[in-house]
Length: 294
Image (cartoon, helix red, strand yellow):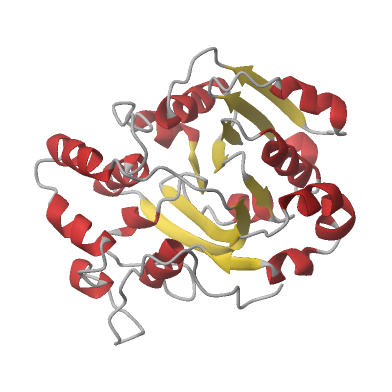
């Protein structure tokens, strides 16, 4: 498992605690944490919590960017399957098992279920996490909402998690997906020319799609992002970079979809949708409450 982090010490501690609760055998996976130049003593966490799984922490001296960090982790691990989870995300106890079990073949890319936690008292979660949330997962789900973009894009998948979409790459969330290591490396991972925030995940997904990878969505491979503000003002530059790499790509259409000016059905004309009502991405702060407790 690859976990990038940057100035997320307390959130990372919760992330690592949630790995300790995984039902998947702890001697069957490895974790690599890469601190992207935050100058935090991330290794100190290992003295504060008990960990029974294999973990390696790499601390970069300078910020190298999201793409570089994830690619570094993919090269450092000696595993067959790469699972990506960001350092500010808490995992459901079956997170690893659900990713592992959903891979039907080497060309599969499994997309997990991205949920958001909006907390009025962050310190309360830190202090009570082990007693309240790790033990009582229902309490965690009750506080969760769908990530607004995820709630929109998951409509490309049917109830079995399969899709005939022409734009499945729009669902590749860099903080919750899995892929075979050899396929990741063969496709050169994330493009490290994306220095600003955003779209490097779409561009990588686009390459995977063009190279015949099959996308599947597993609603039970859930993780919970602890909400924080992001600087998302760099999309124009990254759209232009995307278009310069793939000359057939139409950046104006993606931009229109992300602005809510083009419905998902209009953008994805090759897919069959259960809902006839236009599905439009609404840039609200969060989506609806989580509807399924398991």
